[in-house]
Image 1 (tube, helix red, strand yellow):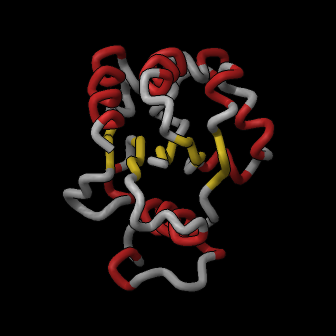
Image 2: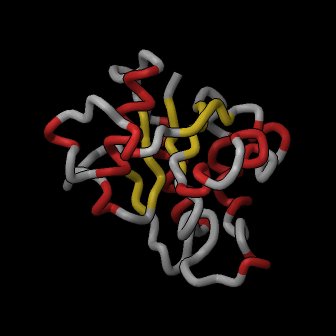
Length: 149
């Protein structure tokens, strides 16, 4: 099963948006993942530090929320971070989740706006412009990436 590791802020809503417009880009995300039904979703957002998995999953439509299978661990709690990932916190968290669940060799994609949290030129990163969040056009590009996992 391919895994999509999902950030929320600046992906599912633009940077500096009012709280009332949080998740305004969610329809674009859900449109893409519905067309890639084999992809499972793991929350990599900092929201996982303040909210339970069940509460995070409820942010999604019922059909998509069923595919939310977990969250990534918090970087300070990681014991065995590979040397190559010490400077790339979010990728280290994603890697730890994949390793803990026997998926390190399985296809995965991170959907995030902060490329500096991943190794340069990481092909498993789909980077979003944080000023706009996920757009209709980017959603189409995301779908193409998901279909090639």
